[in-house]
Image 1: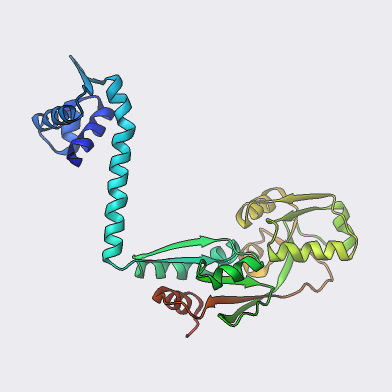
Image 2 (image 1 turned 45 degrees about the vertical axis):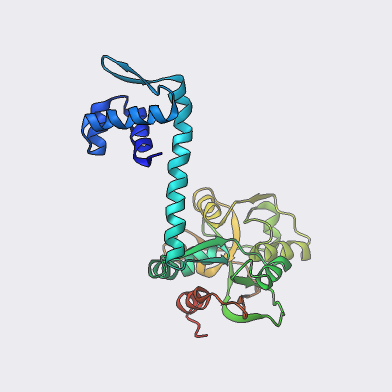
Length: 289
């Protein structure tokens, strides 16, 4: 079956007009009519009713639309895969926190992707847990940034890459604030497993503090949007809020409390044979392997 016949059919099913279909596809109207007629002959059904002012899909034509689109989509995927195989494509799975991706590494990652068009890459949110160690060991994950947890495994390379200060921030400037004031505050959290959420929960537990209200967000961006527009208090890495603090969109909470510094390590399997792993690490994290 000629793929061009199917493409012509799909365009005609949208325009309901042979002349407009011919114009869009840069065909003559007779060529469009020929494509549809040949497709109808191959399928053994009538796809369109010919009317005075255009064409209209038959019941068979309506049914065939979804199958025709599946054929086109499958053909596109096939071509992509063949081209990818021809260019020796690699897949790369990278786990990191959303805040690190957006506020620290996005520009470098974008530049690296431009230089490596044949690498199929998947980004996933990384939280400190045992399963990441197992995934790295089994080559299910290629690179992972682990915050505030040291993982020992002889098959994994473990490289310290950053230490980040945590700060308590809010929308309106405050003159004074005590830990006990959290009892009358709304605390904003990211999802469970997030290292700086765990730090805040640890502080609340140790000091037997129960906030007036807790709100959990899907990610760092939704949390910041709420914080800037509606208020609340959040414990976040300083690099995430540096710009908002400089522009007075957010303010530090004047709390005399020393928060734990979060340490982030980069882990990857030393036995990997993927060239893209070392290239990504060297370019994005400025680490010479």
